[in-house]
Image 1 (tube, rainbow over the protein chains, first blue to last red):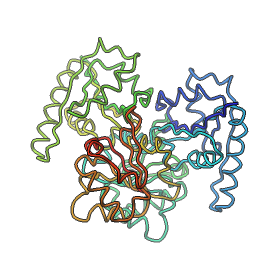
Image 2 (tube, rainbow over the protein chains, first blue to last red):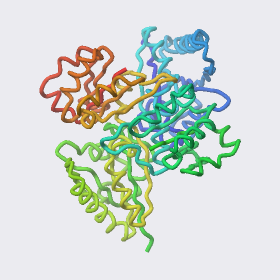
Image 3 (cartoon, each protein chain N blue to C red):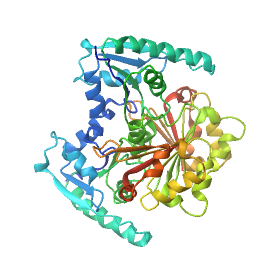
Length: 238
Length: 238
């Protein structure tokens, strides 16, 4: 029997309208859909659920959980487990789509799972999508870079150690901070200390109905709830 | 009469399948479509032309030319001219879509035109899309960044001065070089000198039928034609 194909499918920033024709074609063709599931993240599944062309009554939907642990052995075991689950379907000739918000090439669990599945001998295909920072910049009508400028995408939580973020902020070009879940408040304080607030725009839940945009000194007015909503925050610093 | 709306519409990396549902909805709704036209670049128009849902018999298609001049006064005049042309349609109540390959927030002429049109008092909306570097990474099955890593997007030609590119290549994280039109050959030589060829992947015409991928030492085998094809090249350096 012919083996199934593993597709890592980008679902875009959140709004179902940001799905590409390619993503929809692939999702229609796959019998099995793995989707990330956590307390905060069922966005990818919610997004594709709005596409009426996809007949979900014929799909097997499989949640996959990845903890936010920093323990690399534990993380590795989680990925191995998900890869093994995919393998069962692929061996039966069923193609699997694993959803990823944003674009699958950037900070995606699906890309890491794909590496394992490729090693198991299966065909793997990545379906490109709209990055959340692109959606955020578009919502804010912000041009990230003119033609001669550099763009740095910085994972905020990981760079919130010692003076690492401060150094990165001093580099040339535009900076986009993502993945600030735990430290959004502290990062905004750093922007203030570094006199960068006037160059900053924060977009939360870009492309979704609950989208909010804070510009310049509005960043100093965020509430406790806004900070708790940091998971889907993108901070643009020109 | 109600004024038209100006949409800067991202068409994705080139393949029509990378258009989003949102881009298609907006293109269907706009009577006038401005598209970039140059010797090398009719990709955006070619891409949307494949979408049968869009009735082109009812559209006014307007080419817009931006020269690659470094003379800022001349560039500024070109943008003013295009903005004035858009204004004529917008004042008649016709909405205008200006196409942009990749995502409109990154290195886009449409974003710059939008700034002028906004100043003229019109409503401006950005429609997000798939960046060419995302499509390139997906074609190469490359994960650009794991969760703690920085990504730098570097305009190759602009950074090919003195030791600027060498410095940027030494920074932490993954580097993506774009816009290497004139210096792809020299940039590959620098990668070789800096002992980075083993970490490099070049994708040309990502997502299009003529797509080509060169990995590691394959980069040393590019032909004269390959270098002339540098306009749609993305270089990923891990």
